[in-house]
Each structure stands twice: as structure tokens, then as C-alpha cells.
Amino acid sequence: MTGIWLIIAFIVAIVAMILLISKLKVHPFLAIMLISLVLALLAGIPMTEIPGIIGAGFSGTFTSIGIVIILGAFIGAVLEKTGAALKLADMVIKLVGEKHPELAIELMGWVVSIPVFCDSGFVILNPIRKALVKRTKVSSVTMTVCLSCGLYIAHVFIPPTPGPIAAAQTLGGGEYLLLIIGIGALCSIFPLIAGLLYAKLIGKKIKSADEITESDEVVKTYDELKAEYGKLPNGINAIAPLVVPILLMAASSVVTMVGWTGFFADLFKFLGTPIMALAVGSVFAIIQLFTAKKGKDFYSLTNETLKTVGPILFVTAAGGVLGKVISSSDMMNFIKDNANVFQTLGIFFPFLLAAILKSAQGSSTVAITTTAGIVAPLLPVLGFATPVEIALVVMAIGAGAMTVSHANDSYFWVVTNFGDMTPEQGYKTQTLMTLVIGIASMVEIFILSLIF
Image 1 (cartoon, rainbow, N blue to C red):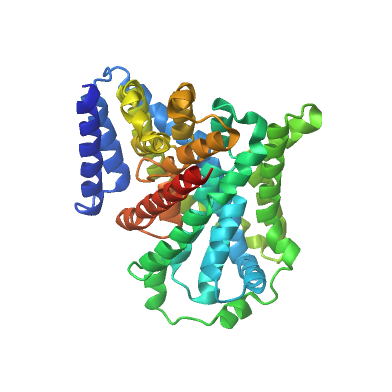
Image 2: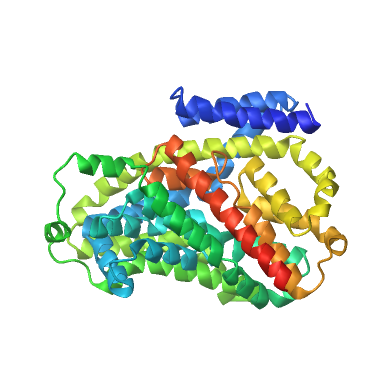
């Protein structure tokens, strides 16, 4: 099966997957794996190649994010066990005030995701999110969506995140990255506002599992929670397991962007990979655990962490299988070959193309880099030549690359599982949120294209 029929088959497959998970209550792992296999057969992928594609998609997810999830979850478990998460929540509240915790966590995510992948950023910041929920009694769903939103916007808009920096280089904007960073910050305004409003709206309609559990229990006051830990860790000790990995990843990004070489450059790049950065963060977390005189819980915390992240890893890996099947089919070539259909759309062309590629295969970075490669030779036809115009094209590609996040996106499963939501709730929160902020981004980009 090729061409438009393959596109139709993909749409039907996604609908079937949603029905299997949400209506028939089939476990997401089984549903995604089944749909991936059926879609691979319908796409005409040789049967002898399908097992290898499934294996590559599954293992590829573990390679890219598996260890990151485990280490990040371990750090979070330690922060909760020692009371450091509550200490961090106090620090955030003192900084922004008690009236705007949703905005605080959204902006925190936006800043952190400039040097850090959104998947890693969510895992790192989730303990603070959970502590702020207990501290302020704000909806857990609202805080989850706000954190996800802030992380996602910077992830697709602002270098040195790999996607936008690769798009800038491909489109000929590598010499004015500072301008692209500035335009990316400017283009973040509308989606940050739209995401915040949507988070508050959806938080009134949906309750996550942790909220339902707490509503059935005698809810303790925040002061009672703090009293259970005795003396909380000091600020530096509490924040080190989170900030050190972020600084290491940021340093690695700066070294790469500037083009430094030599031993120390290699050292920063090594320590700045998400796996090594979170490994260093885990060391600081272990120090914190023993400093709090809770070293006896080290083994049990590690064991519980592995039990917790197991289901998350397997469902996320299944999503990787679906993405690999799509990228191995003829769908990507069909989209590329028919790109001329969209050329009359101007600034909306890169947005729509990136949105199609994002929804089809799941990865925002792949959608950004692929779209940039298709659009680059068409820039003269589209009429984009100045540095500002090229920067806006990069932004339009980024806006499309977050529209939308669903079951074939590892970030969807990270947000859904760490936010204690069901897949069906994930579609109503994460998927619809990415649609809202994608459209809001494109509205702002279109307005700026008229001005500049």
C-alpha cells in the first residue's frame, strides 16, 4: 500500500488504537504493538524486515530515553523521601508568590528546556511539580499540563535544543543564531498564555489518579507533611540533584554551539549527555539521602523506582515501535514528493508539513529536521530571504513539530505516566494542549510575518 491509501490507513490505525485503549480497555502496550504490526503489514513492508523494525523501534527508545527515565525517577524518589521536594517548593513559592504556582512551573519548564530535552526536563522537574501541588492545593492536572507546555515550547523554538538549531543551519540561518533565539523567545508568548489558560480549564474537568487517591484519604496540611520529615535539607543540598544535571547539559549545548574543541570541550560534552548528567545528579541525590540519615532506604528506593518506571518504559518503547514502522514505510516519501501542493500556503506551508510529519512519526526533532530539509530549497519560491524571515520559518516548523503529541511520541507517555493520568486523559490533556499551543504559536508567527 502506498500514496494516499497509506495516509488513510495510518489515520484509521490511530483511531483504532485510541478505541482499543480508551473504550475496550486494552493495555496501551498491547494496543500499540498490535496496531504497529497491522500497519507494517498494510504498508507493504516485507514480512522478513518487520521483526527487525519492531526490535529497532523498541530498543531505540531505551537507547534514547530509557536510562534517563530511570535515573530521573530515582532522583525524584530521593527528593520526596528526604523532604527536599518540599524545600524546593518553598523556594519556588518565595520567588513567585503563592497565587501563581501554575505560571511558575510553566516558566520553570520553559527555561529548563532551552538546554535540556523536554522528556528529561519533565522527569527532572516532576518532583517540584508534585510538591507544589501539595503546597498550594492547585489541580495536579493543571500543573502537569503547565509544566509540559513550558518544556515543549522551548524544546521546539529555542536553540541550542537540537531541533531548532539543526533547522537554522539547514535553512542558512546558522550565522545569526542569536536572532533566532530572540525570535524563539518572542514566539513563545502566545503559546505560553494559551497553554496556561488551557491547563486551568482542563484541570477543572479532569482529576489524575493522585488527586482521586488523596480525596479518599485524610488530607494532611502542608505543615504536617513538613513535620513528618523533621529538618528539611538546606537549599543548596535540595537543589543540587536537579540543577547540576541542567548546568551540565547547558554547558554541553554551549560548547557544541560555539564549536569549542579540545579535552575540556570533550569532557563537557561527555558529562552533558542526558544519561551522564543525570548520573551525576543521582550521585548528589545519594549524598543527600545519606546526609538526611536515610541511607538504609537506598536499596528499597532503587527497587521501588525500577518497579515504577517499568510500565512507563515498555509503553514508551511501544510508541517508538509505531514511529519506526511509520518512518520505514513509504509515507514519508509520499509526503516529501507532494510538498509542492502546500507551497501556495506561504508561512503556513512549513507549519502544516511539520505537523503532518510530527503526527505521523512522533518525534518533534525528526519532524523539524525533515521539514527543514524539504523547505530549504523552496525558500526562494516561498519568498523568504531575510534573516528575520528565515527565523520565522524556523519558528513555523517548530510550531508544527509540536502539533500534536500522541501515542507514538515518547513525551506523551512521560507526561501521562508521571502525571498519574490514564491514556484517555492524556489525549484530553497532552494531545489537545499541544494542538492549542501549536495553533497559538502559528497565529503569533503569522502576525509577526505581516509586521516584518
